[in-house]
Image (cartoon, rainbow, N blue to C red; front, side, top):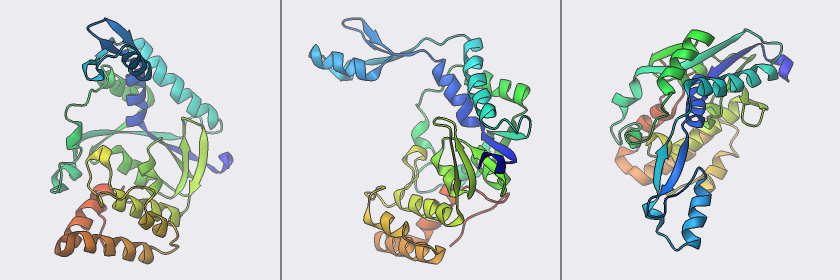
Amino acid sequence: MVKEVTSLIIDGDILVYEAGSKADGKFYFYPEDEFCTPVKKEMDVWCKLNDQDPALIETHYKPETFNMAKTYLRVRINNLFNFFLHLKTNYKIFLTGKGNFRETLATIKPYKGNRKDVHRPYHLPALRKYMVKEYFAEVIDGEEADDACGYSQTKSSCICSIDKDLNMIPGFHFNWTNNELYKVSEVEALRNFYCQLITGDATDNILGLFGLGAGCALIKQVNLCTDENAMKALVCHAYQQRFGNYANQFITEIGNLLWIRRKPNQTWSL
């Protein structure tokens, strides 16, 4: 299947975030006893054994050098290129730039509003610049790198990412964490999208049908559908039951927040 892939479409956002996080020198510190460890589970065990309050655990960072951050990034990219040895230069890397149409679209809950106080890796800005300079990454304004990955996908290209959201785009996909190359069919891609309409996306602060998770009966029903109209009917009925007269408003907004574009400037509609 590797030989069927003729070009790579790479999610640069996750690459730089991974490398930056790895170089962040994150560790957990218990001030009263001055105990520290980079492993959260180890800290939790220590608190339990010493009858200490986990609420007092502090998170600190001691970043490594930028050269180390670059090394982590290069290793990941080189491993990716080594998997696709026949594609030495035929690739595109996308990074999310300024502005995002989803921010103005979201009225129910602020889009990614839950990330305001989340720590960002120290070397992240420098790694983004390095990616543009050394790997010719393209910065995408007004939307997300995911959207550019989505509408750049062709029958023979391969989206490289660990972001499961991109599985709503049909075609080849590559997960660099476990070196898994797989193919998503059109039906599977639609199922993934309609299942997200049910669960929402807590990471991006997107509401779904609250209380319905990945193992619910409705998800199982959608995953048995082989036709988009059947998927749509099931999900719309669930929204109608939950939101009544506001069902169309909710499903349209949430659908557009979740939908990864397959064409430039595309919007999703019932």
